[in-house]
Length: 279
Image (cartoon, rainbow, N blue to C red; front, side, top):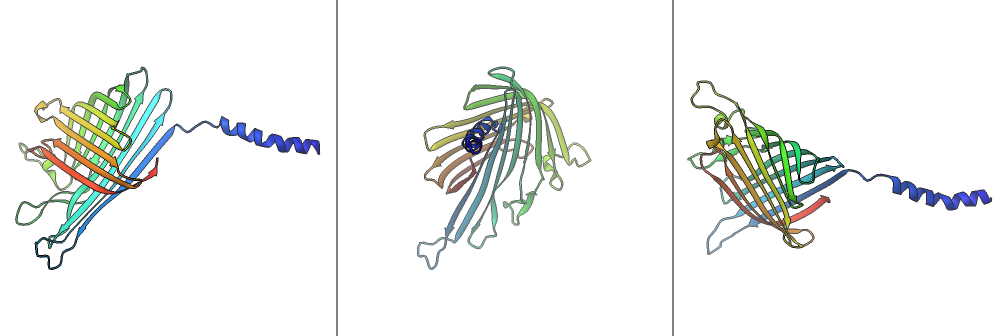
């Protein structure tokens, strides 16, 4: 009996120490989704106007593996939105697939070598509405931008990360070859390879308890055509107005001759519901 009582009292203590000895997982995950919806319906409205409906869904995730010698950061961003104004057909307003992975080997406190890769493309067909009829200009994996790089990273403080390295960028197309075709050749090229330098600056800066500023600047300079240097700047201010309500201000600037001879600018302000599936 005494042996049984001793075992009964010792069992919780043994279990407690066993739980303490279980190592914590080196992985950290985060996943947040948001939905924005705007709807206007008019009937016999004296001031004029048209019915309108617009919606956007976004999903942003991050998985990070951390050990004494390795930092492995994986990011995934998805967005899709459409709008309908009056009798017009439904038109796409947002479409994004962006995957990224960076593996850093920690040899010092600030400067460390890394290898990385990114994939950028879209879900659905895109159209140009400038003519009499809509003209298709893009679709799923057409184009797709794939970049692989290796170099060194520098992190002056926790909120700012930079890296610079040698890179290879590949552009893949199927039907819309304007992104890859060389007009000086008779053959239609459906893919394009460029070796060059890549520089990236990432910022994730809490401005206060409810406001977060994020920025990512990507620069790719082809060694054989420095005048075709591609710049992609994506800035976002996120304000958490409540537990599930967020205000999102985004400005994206793209200067890339493979996509357009003009500098592209997209501005978006969205108020909607946001939910963190994993924090």
